[in-house]
Length: 372
Image (tube, rainbow, N blue to C red; front, side, top):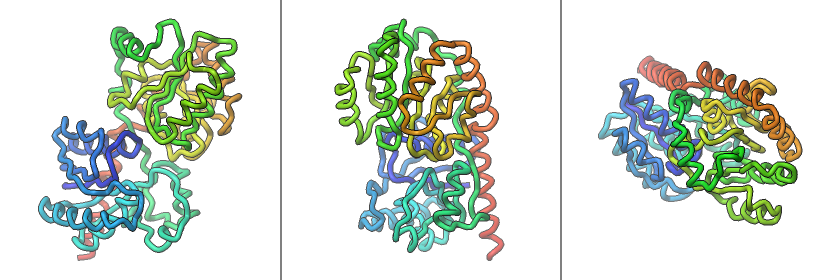
């Protein structure tokens, strides 16, 4: 089967990681994925696996941008040239593009809803979900039904998946030491961190406020923030204002998050909005205890008191209390990490996600055949 995975860009972020991971797994399963986007950091991962990337000018947030029409005609040519069977769109702009291309070529398209959307006129006029829509969590499925009136039979619940073995694989002590050295982290400090786009919805500021509380009585900690985004300037200012520069380290995004996570002791995701949380899944697969906000679909991943702590959002005090508990009781942290790794292996593997997605592709194409 020839599949076109369409997204806005392939810069660091959850949707880009999902797109690339799905493409790689589909290829391993014997299918023929092609990824189309406006490019970005993760294109090199596709090239490494010899997966074709097709450039289209979709680097816009506006569904009315004229670039979309250029992208549509380029995609229509690609689809006819390559004999694409199905289009799988990931973002609002790529959904609109896929809908137009589908009308031009007759190739069906589906979409994945990765989070929560504002209800606006554009969504009401052009829903853009395709013939089927994947919801990555129960919370997202309810959002589609309750807020946008998407019919339940059109929604398919397929959890995000990660390459568990890659994160489960023990990194050598030398690899971890090398990473810590480059990050200027001494080997005696506990590492508490987050890997996520520096966006206000990820709630980094609440982790920094919790850090201020913790360092008043525990100096053997480092708070590692890996990512980039529009909030970086504000977060740097907050670190200075809180006078915790000695304890907070910012690093640019990394292609291989498994090595970075191997250096963590505790993973924190203080989001105020989250569809499911691919970064949380990676942390679980790495055997880390996770502290996260009880928002969106995170409850699907984290069972409070079992593989981590689920906390009220925007609550630095609760975050600091949870971190301190895990630091004080390392056996508890270890047991939570092991349980999280087991859950990731059993329920959220990349192979399972890809197989379920492929089954949906097949169902859509079978329905198309019945109509002719």
